[in-house]
Length: 517
Image (cartoon, rainbow, N blue to C red; front, top):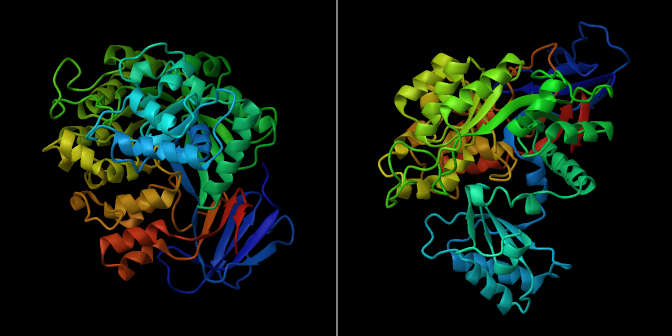
């Protein structure tokens, strides 16, 4: 995609630069010059530039979300949110209320909800509980399927189980390998529908200053994104991850990390991303793989579940590395993280550990020594703080250890894991900086990082003072985020201010993707 020929943003300010305003010249999709406001540009431009006065607003590099499932996020935005449920009964009541207030799905289509977190509920999520809610609403034949907040489990009514192709189940709560084979019935839609939803989700992300995402959708992303590029995709930048089952196609195409997927269509907005592998489960499903047992859990899976052994993972990573791909390894429990680092060391691969939620101090040092990026989702700490205290007692000082990782020199990349958390970088920033949400006291405040560090971890490695020659991917903000701590001493207030950061404009390759000036 080519940007506009030339655009001059006048009367702008750079982050943490309260002095004289600057003008930012964009040309050919790149940053051509950053000069004192009113000074002539030191470089020729392709045409007389359009001028936009940003009226003293702060211009920063555009923000990236380093971990999304973009189609799932696009679909979730249309679904019933049950994330506030504090019990199975509460979630069932939300289902009943939706059926009471809205037209029910027709033709056997299920009512799909998302966001429940059941690990510490006082009651058990069963098919019978959902059956009763549907019956109370007078709609006993409507299938109901609820997706957990971490996407590692689902909870279905009896009709919902039948919709998923499951004749019988002892509870209706499907975990990990029970759920994954059935998930395509819920998590996929027709291509045309999915593509339209993704376009809408990209517009919403641009309104929050997002210029790019890493897409780990569990799908044939090479085919999906080539289709979207061929259809004229002009939204966010996308790095499309590849899963093992689709790796052969990417290697056969000769694609290396960063290669455009749109050839021969000419767009460089969508490029090849890393190999994604899930090595363990999640905290809320009691499947994150840990050195110690979960509190109150016994049996063979009391430590969680390892989905792939190191002697399988390392050769897979070595194969991807030899072909020029990076690797992104999902690891949440501390033992899974240690094993993922073993695999990076054994394979020589480059890339990231996705989540890195529970770490031993020695493994923080190994992240740094191996040059592995910690791709983290700070809002998960706010979602998981209570369940972590219950299931990982005595261990939470090393849960989401962002300050420790930063101090060790580990590269950080912030993301959302949308739809697990909202695709909104200011939500992630607020959680990373304050460890606070909803007015609560900060959770392990010693693991906070400052606003500069969080912003640097959100802009894909771009310098905050705008590098001449870099891509013209920018966000125009109503406030300077680096100035917010001075105005908000209370962490809860600072969290609210960061989450509310207003974005007046977003540009990708010098073209407006959001314009509210």
